[in-house]
Image (tube, rainbow, N blue to C red; front, side, top):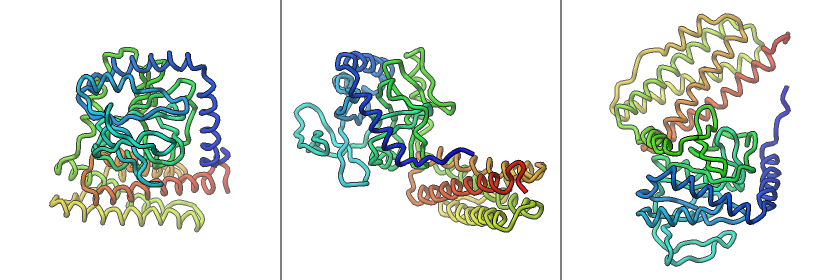
Length: 361
C-alpha cells in the first residue's frame, strides 16, 4: 500500500528546493531562456494582441514576461498586474502600462493605482509544474481562488523554466491546471493525457480557439441538457447502490459507507430537479445507461470499482462545466455536488482497499 503523502509539508519543501534551484541558474543562462520563452509566446499566441493580459512582475528568478507583454501592448493589448487585496482572498487585476502610478505592495512588487479589469488571459509564474499541467505556487492559493471566480475562465499560460518540472504536485480538488506551459524547451499544451509539446508553433492558435470556444458560457438549452444528464446519472447511481447492497457480501461499516453514497445520489436528484425547474426546464424521468451496465457486472470488488468509476465520471462532468456556468446559485450547487462525489470516490476506494482487497476475509 502506498504511503500517504503529507501534501502541505511536501509542497513546502518542494517550494524551497525549486526556488533555490532556480536562483542557482547563472544570470546569463536565465536571460537566454527568457528570450526563448518570449519568442515562443509572441509567435504562438498572436491573438493576445487584442486581449486583456494579466501578467506578473518577476522576482526570485522567475521568467521575465515584460518584453513579450510590451510587444503585445504595442499591438493593441491591454495589460494588468495582480494585486493582493487581503489574506486568503482572490487577487484583483488593475490596469497597468508605463506611466501608470504604482505603490509598493507585497514583496515590494508594484501595485497600480488604476481601475480594475478582468483579464482574458493570465500569464502565470509556476514555482514548479507537473506532467499534467498543474502549477505549484507560493502557497497562498491566490491564483487558484482568483481563477475559480472568473467567468468565463481566462486562458492560463504558465511561463516556467524546464528545471522547474516535477513528476507531480499531488494536485488537490481546488487546484486548477494551466492550459499551456511555455519553457525554453517549447510550448506544452495541457490535454487529457497531460503535457504535449507542440512542434508546430503555427498550430497553437487553433488550439487556443478551441479552448476558448469550449469555455463560452452555457446558454439555457445547454444548461438544461447538462442538468438532465447529471440527473439521469444520479438517479442511476442511487439505484445501482440499492441493487448492489442487496447482494454485496460486506460488513456493517462498509455497508453504512455505501448507504451514504446512496443518500447523496438521492439528494442530488432532488437538487437537480429544483435547479431545472428554476430555469423553467422539464426534469428528465429517465435513468442513465450506467444502471443497466452496472447490473451486468459480477463480483463484489468489480461492482464497487464500477460504482467508483461512475462517481469519477460525474465529478469530471461537473468540473468541466463549472467554468461555463454564469448563475452563481447553480455553480454553488454543482460545486457542492462535485465535492460530495470526491468524498464518495474516497469512500469507494476505502471499501475496495479494506473490505474487498484481494485476499481480504
